[in-house]
Amino acid sequence: MPAAFPASSRYASVFRPGLFEGQVAIVTGAGSGLGRCNAHELASLGAKVALIGRKIEKLEGVKAEIEKSEGESRCYQCDIREEETVKQTISRILADLGRVDALVNNAGGQFAAPLESISAKGWDAVVRTNLTGGFLMARECYTQWMKRAGTGAVVNIIADMWQGMPTMGHSGAARAGMLNFTETAAFEWAPVRVNAVAPGWIASSGLDHYPPEMAAHIRSLPKHVPLGRLGTESEVSAAICYLLSPAAAFVSGSCIRVDGAVPNAKRPREISNRNPTPAFD
Image (cartoon, rainbow, N blue to C red; front, side, top):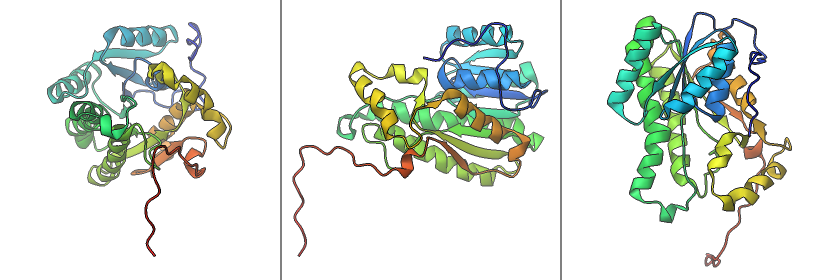
């Protein structure tokens, strides 16, 4: 679990102070984990941060942390899967803060299950959270402000799904769809820039949501990482801030992997209860 941010100190970002001064950034899933960390960094760099999530008490906790660190943020309770709710939330943010310069589509969630046991309801719930919700947020930021302003940046948080996601096929399909959406939006919405960040195995509070039987597997992950450890929330946040910054002014339709080169280490997966297929001779 990440430690709480010190009450009297600002986030120690690698980026220059005031980088996002005068800008408004929206972070979904901001109540914990990667979203909380990124909200802190953006606020420390001068952005006014709109914190979005389903649980208002978690958002208010992050808001209090940011205020203690002399940053500025506002809370907006929103289920990103609901179209009208998303429309109204972006309208409220524009009424309150006057503009939207950046969107970090971080909210997501899934559960572990083999494909054969995933119901249509379970599949739909994960796809709506990890794909549809991100699309709705991005579309409303674009149509309600960025298109008219002729500027803006969107960063979609996806996942390490490059070799499939056994036991999380619903999430893998949604994340792959989000990458394709990123590439399409980068073309259709230019000059608004749209990019993606694909975290690998990150030491985040998100790991706490998996069932106890996965604990041993989670502890074993570092030995499969070429860089020898799990990533940190701050390493993902730094990639997001780069893509939102002027340094990435000519970067759009791209994806930055933050995964310690795990997809480059081809590894066999355990296969059980399967007989060899007949050979063609």
